[in-house]
Image (cartoon, rainbow over all chains, first blue to last red; front, side):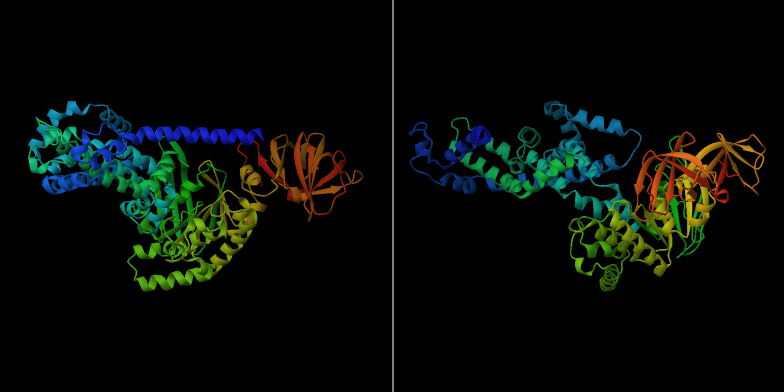
Length: 279
Length: 353
């Protein structure tokens, strides 16, 4: 009797705790959506209310038709997909090498990869600009994608290394005896089995690139090449802030990321646990 | 099909010598078992044959071609792993067809070969399944089918039956033997299980500490082990040993003297190891001059009885073919069949005679 009661209490407590946390975490998103749907004339007149007396999709329409938003959206998509592809590819190959091979300087490579994660992005701006100018990639989306990819490679490498570690070596050796080169064995056997890892890695790199503001602001100057995060700032002008459109644009910004995670989440949950804990 | 030769093969991992000078000739179509305790180098030797590791010295020849630097895919060998190493993301049919698809075989011919191999192994109803939906024995069959399908020059087996339960192991052992009789492909089979090695192999290679201890037909090795290691390793229950010293015409074992008429013995008062297999000890009576021993454990086997005895200050095992009525604590009397006694020198354990 008491154990049943205790179990119920524990269940309710956990449920309450999670609900509180979820409410706390999601409230800003809710507020964003609410503002995006509130007609401009009600924004300041109604005071603080949980839901406006009237809603409208006008902000979304304005953002999509009267601003350059579709263009920024397309720019962001190119940069984020490019960065995710590059980072995942490089991370997968490097992770494979770190997992499967012993080579001189292996420990140093891992260490240096880790150290790069400790630099403030701020410190890299000037050198990055110089390097990109040197190869003619300054003020270009490709340059931005390369920078995002580079910043994500260390994490992608560590993630992929743990996933490859979990794949038994026997499988590759069997494939090599069956007629594969090492590269074929990697492509035909190891990578299909690390699909969750590849999805997780691509997901992280994509999200990081998609929502990055600072580097995009500094490295891209041409208006036509802007990505969404810096473009959102243009809703703040000298004289006013167009909260409605800015909120609508932010909601649109969230949509692809939500779709992406809805798609990969079942790989993620299975992948992150099975990849990180060897077994 | 092809013969396999190992000539002075050595392998080092860092500073550790894993194999020290292996010489071995395996005939075309022969089934050879490499047997030894874990860490004896038998698996390393198999990996060298497969091309998964490189030799540190010496030559490996498959079909008269030196393959030291040939990558695994070009050696035309097939391997069955202890873990089966089935590709988890492929169906049984695709697992079986994998080696063929890599060799650019036509899809139609792959299909018919897969069907043929699957039928011969009883896998025809499982072709669409993934490996995780198969039992241990079925996985084992798929692994064998994948090895058979391209008719390689040599089969390599790395403890293929170790992950099966006891009953399945016996069944697959018999199937494996039948399969080899039918295909007659050269096979090298690594196992730590000396019963598997004896039952399957045309010849067995007993290894210890990176060296070949003895090569021979199973019964030859069983009847005339070349040294004390082989004698103790081959045979279950294991051979009994006692240290003795030679006297004219026999061996003194404590206060008992075992007469060994007609045997060539080292000079009197030399120390020797005397070994007797459990089935070569006979229960007898005190009147007939048996050696007294106290029974410590009685293990009825159904087809016989295994007795653990305290004898010569150590534990000896006797395999009695009958249903013994002996109880723990009883004293029994043993006769040793002199013609079945093995003698080894005390320093290096080499066989004497």
